[in-house]
Length: 59
Image 1 (cartoon, rainbow, N blue to C red):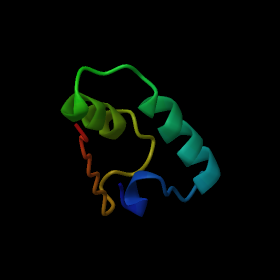
Image 2: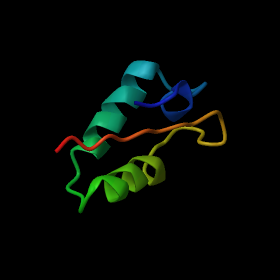
Image 3: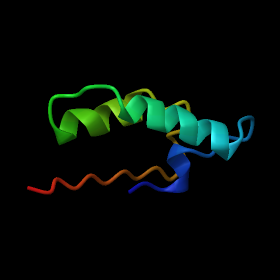
Image 4: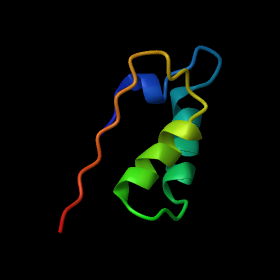
């Protein structure tokens, strides 16, 4: 789950931002915390805007 701050940019369509987010989400990561860090680090969005990212591990 995430807020719009992770994918909204004034100069990029939401569709393109979502494609980039999905591509980043497919990057292998060691654990949930590392995956969330990757998503925030490699996001092309303005993460100064109300960005919230929540990860849930189902076991």
